[in-house]
Image: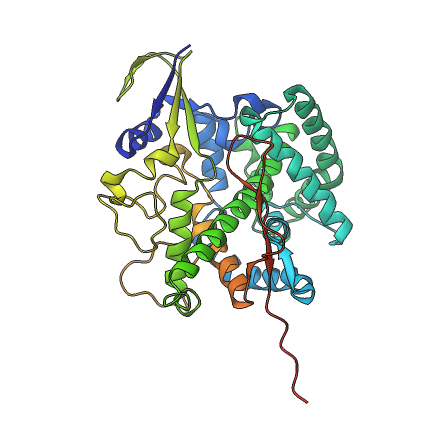
Length: 400
């Protein structure tokens, strides 16, 4: 087996678009990841993506952003504002869990703090499966933990949610617009739709929708804190211009992709750009961090945080952070919103959930807690925040 590394934007983009390369990043985490959408290939991948695309639509995302997410943010943020502080990672997990559970189709009948804590604990366990290839601990012990967590998730959350939706479908009642509902509606069109497969698909969606966005939000807040300190004359622009705030989030996403690398494995023997002849036993490591800082696409200061930068060629402001080709992130527009083009009506623009979170936090004066510095997660080799404490402005008091 040979491991090949690709670092330039052009080479990385070409490899990501190739249909003869399968996902290879999650092989170690097969206990959860083997049959989820991101790990499928070929006809099975196309069939499931086509079904799920019925709910992964811009109009659905925009409706969530306009009608549901603002309430979710306010409800989740309220107790932290009373305390005057929060850990961005903990807050992000809670607020994104609420949104992602609704969108995925996982019911939370109690909507209690204890129920939320249970689900967050399960997602943290699932996250260990997704990052098992970068884990520094006992991998077999992690797999055993994930199996136990999947059993609890199935019994307490997935099976009741599935049974309720199946009953609605059979009764011809009005249906929720979520991933689980469309999977059940169009189950006959899926090559593999066993209970176990659908359960793991929903577990992964909760993980990807909640935890991935949390890391992106925390990275964006960190970059903005540093940038506002260095550019005090422009600091107010972030709140005054939400489209500019979105450009800040996209620039941070470019610098901090959720996964620093993409991994692909050939489905057969083929000639690959910048690599040469490869076969199924070989591994292609696509360095997304390096590709997203390619000076030929992002300028001489490509390693710096500079919102609103112009790119060369048909290159998005977030680079390759959401992937390309068949495996491009299906939830990209939910997280990052629509790219601003021409004159934008701020009231009608789709900003994405990460920008909405950033704006909500900054409106309440979020700033790093000097007495409790942020720290990174040492349990994996990928760079990730473990805690990021912030302070808020005191709540405004009513007049006399």
